[in-house]
Amino acid sequence: HVKRTLEKGFDKWPAFFVSELQEKWNGWLFARYHDDAALSHAWTRLDAGETLQSATIKLEPIALHKDAYSKQRASDFIRFLIELDSGLNRQLEDYARSFAPPGVGVAIIPFSYDTQYQPSNAWLFDDTQNGDVANFGMYFWSLQNPLIKPPSMYVMDSNTVEGKVTVIYETMDGRPDPYRGAYPYRLAALASWEDWDAIFFHYWEGFQKKNHTYPDEQYMAGTLSYIAPTHYWTSVYYEKDPALLSSMAIAGQIFLRGAITPAPRPLTYVIGSQAIFDFNGLTGETLAQATYTQGARVRFAPHSNSGMTVDGRQDKPRSTEPAVATHMGSEVLWDWPNGRLIIDTPTAKAYIGAPHGKYRFKDGTVVGGFAGNFVNFGMTSIDGKPLTGPGGTREIYLS
Image (cartoon, rainbow, N blue to C red):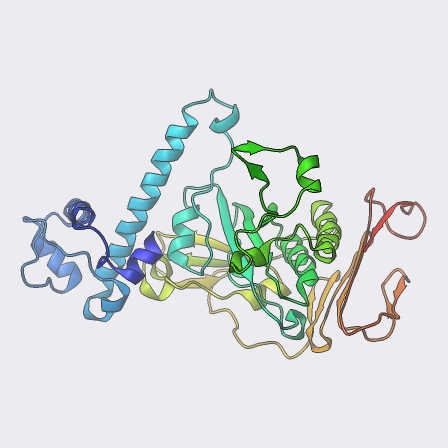
């Protein structure tokens, strides 16, 4: 609501709702400034015909008009929209929680307010200042090997909020993509390193007829009912993609079993009021380089009169691409100069990308002799024991 409203304005809104929102905006301003003199002093000026007494302060600025108004007016407008939206979210949550006794069911489960799919400080702050969950949804469409460039996963790699449950609500790499099977491993590596909580792939595709849902067994034996053969959304279905499913199975075990150690000392990016209630923060931050090298967390400080600081220092994240392979601790190597991702832990191994002869993992396991120009190799112990050595596992999943 906040990001879209500020970017798109109100031209397509019915007049009734514009009037309702303007009334709330003027009420918010009256409670804050009390009269036109104080408001005009804070904002430098008011437009002709604007007055608190007649509730005619316009719904401005939107992004297209931001340069015509003071930064304080812009800050107030963004703050108003966030408070309105988050307040409604909180009302709905409180109402829902009232239906269960303390400590039971809906009274205690985490609440998510929205699924974020674009970078935005205001949007992220709006969702997480009261909500329990930082919730993202992202899809990728490409015909290029994603491992030939420094690691990056739009939005998801720059918005891990400190102290919040982190959930990828829906995600998938769409067909046609000859490198589609790499996506689960890339996601498992990032999610494990950033210590996320849940990932949901989309979309298996529903099997329903006449409002009757069939058992899973019958669903599995059925045929995939596409929206339409030409519809782009069918590209994210994965029921009939055994190569992708195999990668999802191994990568899922790596993530669920905690095979990759989370970042031990992630950087904390503190985002103050100047980066929340400001049009410059409407498009968010890019923290990918810090995320993939040290791990990164976002902490909001709405009462701090500052922009973004890093562990207490006034700084901006590095935006230049690294010139060498990226080490994610000692267990994950994004060897993008050689077009490959390597996961090497005591309980899991993966070699994804371009073959380069034989590769020896740290425990002596060797893989190689792959045909073609791209491979997805993964294995993980079923019982959580090491893959080799004394006390090693006797059961391994292998793809």
